[in-house]
Amino acid sequence: MAKDFSAMEDSNRSNNPSIHDVSEPTRRTVLFGGMASALATLMPMTASAAATRAATLGSAPLIGFKSVAVSTADALVVPEGYTATVAFAWGEPVGVAGHMPAWNADASNSAAEQEVQIGMHHDGMHYFALEGSRRGLLAINHEYTDDGLLHTDGMQNWTAEKVRKSIAGHGVSVIEVEQKNGQWQTVLPSKFARRITAATPMAVTGPAAGHALMKTANDSSGSRVLGTLNNCAHGYTPWGTYLTCEENFAFYFNGPQQPDAHQRRWGLRKDGRGYRWHEFDARFDANQHPNESNRFGWVVEIDPTDPTMTPIKRSALGRAAHEGATVATTRSGRAVVYMGEDASFEYIYKFVSRDTVRPGGFKANRDLLDHGTLFVARFEPDGSGIWMPLRHGEGPLTPANGFADQGEVLIKTRQASDLLGATKMDRPEWIAIDPQSGEVYCTLTNNTQRGAPGRPGVDAANPRAGNTMGHIIRWKERVDFDGIAFRWNHFVMAGDPKNSRAEAKGNINGEAYGSPDGLWFDSRGVLWIQTDAHATNMYKGEYAGVGSNMMLAADVRTGETRRFLVGPTNCEVTGVVTTPDLRTMFVNIQHPGESPTDRSDPLQPDKYSTWPSGQKGARPRSATVIVRKKDGGIIGT
Image (cartoon, rainbow, N blue to C red; front, side, top):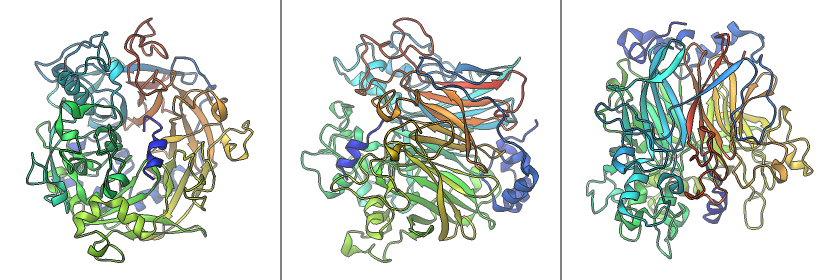
């Protein structure tokens, strides 16, 4: 998540196979018999594979680099022996043949040009191998836009063209990348190149498709939506597709002066978050189109190899301020999708598919995520936990309590979880699964309202009042990923030992950090932790000794963390993936130079940062950083 919206939220209460190889019917033994280690970076983990790889790895040290120092410089820092190259920045062409406009440094690119250029504010991403670790597709989320930087004169002289450009800056970029002569570059043009924006036509499937609460004046079917927005973290599936997740969608809508109970529960308010799209695109005015916001907050499935595929909003996975969608596979072959909802006092979910994953790629699994059961987590004080099903007609999820059918349960996932008594968490964000143990980890970024008057108090899973620093929780399913019982504990309470307030010190074993956000396991079992302390918190108070946002590597067996990367001023470090051979790492740097007031000044774009160009007066740009070892070795060793 790019910004600390908690105040508003609280107020609302080697050689490797390609993805084509993995999808072939001949790979049936891979899908149903446990993954070979060569495929581990391409597919979610099975329990049998976890045991095999744990025995293979043994007790060998996982981390071998020297930790970098805390920094507040407007620069990106990596360890000795590593290089970091900036690539795939906002405004570069994605590679659509015949439509490859160059980026204009003064932000004068048109909306039509932005529609075929890489979007703004990179977030989650995944590498889909075409030729192992030499060539592949990068699918990159673009969470939001800073209109002060996106337009030459910022928010002044607001027009329909500016709304269109802002809409185009959102969504997902699919680019083809390849390594030539030791350097990575975008393939231009590419038959795979695509921009998916907040105006791209999409289908809705699952129980909420066609529901009365999904129908609008422009879509009487309730099954066709324009666009995806606030795309934060992501996921990927065993059948080779990308899952992009819609997070803080409510901020884009102009809500009524007096929102109803449903709208209040989802954070709709008058004037939204200042995007002003409703002034020229009426669908973002909830007064005119009250159901339009119900059509956002979903997990969207995309086939990155097919630029003609209509993205699909999978309503069976529930509606939420989705941070990500991490997929595991059970021993029987069913898909399980873990999801956190990045908002204060919201919930952790998992979806279990009814059917098993079939060989044959996306075509064979096109409807797999439309059928299954959504669960919400309750963390008990004794370290046990239970997954509670969100099924219409069970328990309080009845018409008498406002749930006419399963579609309404999924559209009103928050209200349903409230009634079930799920555990209200401290902003659950990214989820990652340990490829050795099968334990599931989730970052809980922070929650300064925990224990405040009129707000929920501390509990066993969220034990710190005024939680400024955040923590990481983990759990192990009792039997398999589709089970209903689990055991949990805390991996770490983030913080800085130098803080004066005891609850902000944490129990860090290694380098101090706060606000853990991005989270990802590589195939060796190294846990990569990325932080997002908002610009208004950086460099002062309890964060004074922490410095710029960073990425750390952790050995979960010992809890040791080492600081691997520090980003430029006021950025968020988010999104990380490696090539299958672990020798190239892609890391996203979001909103460098972000203004503490959330809207950058176009007349002084370099006020906080000029990264990555470093030139006076330059607009800061979100970009992907390519990290490699100088000796060509495995990242992190």
